[in-house]
Image (tube, rainbow, N blue to C red; front, side, top):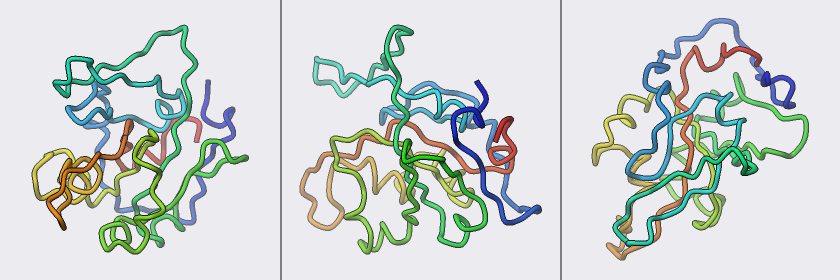
Length: 181
């Protein structure tokens, strides 16, 4: 099914772009150790089957992808700046799925972190092109990993429950030119 048939379109104010290509990284969809998969817009629109944490409490993640299950489209938190979002963004004809722009810098500063979904709610994120290489490296310098997947608060060193980011879309020029958008 094409993206346009699902009521999602790409709104774009510009024709040219300097966004780097990260589609090679987004072509795989196996779950990471943090329980997310890197997806395209089309794959995101296919929905997400509820994930199940292994009952052995060893933090392993198993992904349920039965064809008999109904896959829900996850809400999307777009981490790009206000300007980048204004230039090119996904738009839905209705409120499902919810797409919200919460720039990474406003989340890191605490200015808008209270607007993130509750920690028990599964959602997807759109990683800005400037952060894709760092995000893919999964190192301790990645502010996105530190924000969403850390099990300890950087401010208090208290343990905390990470957010349930289940799908990650990496921004690239190919992303915005994807078939059907």
